[in-house]
Image (tube, rainbow, N blue to C red; front, side, top):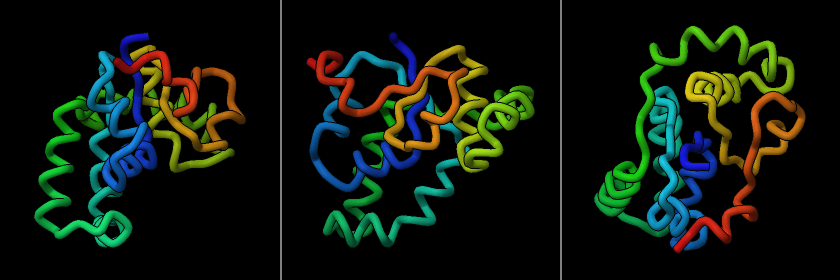
Length: 137
């Protein structure tokens, strides 16, 4: 496994605290993909992240930019052709997860998520954080 789609909750976890998730993002040799559409979700939760992490707004942006160096932002137009198939896979379970499934289908790769909704489908492989211990240096 060398490429993974990273879901928003995982990415935000890496923003909030210095721990295993951040270490995986910054120290593994995995190519992480992140749908550009989900950047808005991070910005929508900026105040919550700042409060939980105890950051200033400047510290939030510094860390956000640092973590974004380790992920490839995938433009929505790259995955749009996969959205219908992704909706058929997970749309009835959780519509918010369609963009991640579409990205995984477009790049033929798994998703990193601890979201239980992903476990209710069996088309795209899902990795949980607890499965990454042997992928980090």
